[in-house]
Image 1 (tube, rainbow, N blue to C red):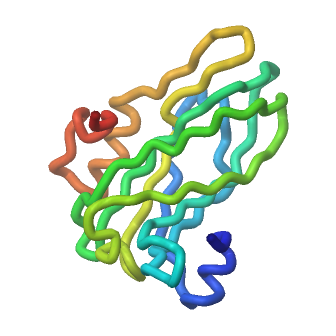
Image 2: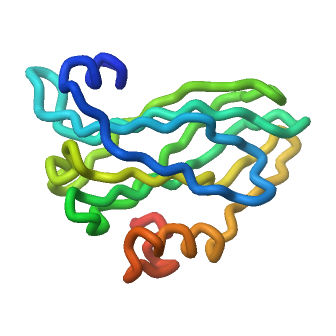
Length: 157
């Protein structure tokens, strides 16, 4: 599979993205890109997400999870995705990572869809954790789709 920059060059577009602000977050997200990837020869149809993020703490991060919510071309909620990274991230280190999201009808995201990202949770080397504030995130998400609830932020089993 190609990287997100290659797909942006080939498809000549990129979706709108939004990084939610979170007070006290141990990770700062400096860039977020996403794109609808059609069903190419060997690559399945999906939505690709790419993030640049930094460990803003003095502790080593060993695992983290981002919540990504996507909205279709009509600004209707399409899907929620958990982007997980289980890697050691030293204090003040910046990392780039990307994930492919499979969902029902990803083609509805092409060109005019919107991706929203927030930090969901972090596990530190010392076994302590940081978790997002549901109310803070939901208040910002509701500016896009007012009908969403706290259940919309939960992973579906």
